[in-house]
Amino acid sequence: MSVHRWRFSVDLLLAASMSGLIWTGLFMWLILPPHSRDNTVWGLVRHDWGEIHFWIAVTFVTGLLIHIVLNWAWFLALLCKAIHRHQVLGTGKRCVIGSMCLLAVIALFVLTLFWANQSKVIIEDPRPRRGWRHQVTLPPTPLAMTLQNARR
Image (cartoon, rainbow, N blue to C red; front, side, top):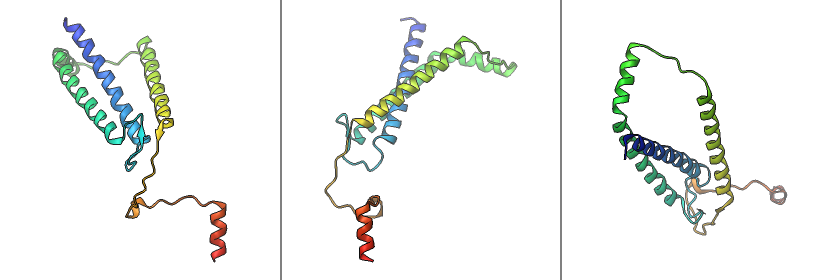
């Protein structure tokens, strides 16, 4: 396999793993927040999603190390060039295409997070919880408000 194919494969791996890290991180933060206990999405609880997130991170770091090794000569040349002179990045078709791809990836993230939220299964925990963090206060309903007023 040529160096160019290795670079392309590693860059593809980095893009996929970074996308996976962002998606699983947002997923756990928005859909299955801490203390969600036994709530499941697609049959997995928060800790299972955390393991997936961890192994995607291991894949990303491994790919990043391989990427640095494959592009070490380029990095040194860029560093030497930056020391001697500065160049301004130009605008063009590449910027437009890159922006469109970024917007497409963001739209894909948002749509899959909405889909995951719709697939969430909430399981009520019958065990009593202790402590102020676990006390749940429900918004007042008209019946509850009238009962509170009747007691006064």
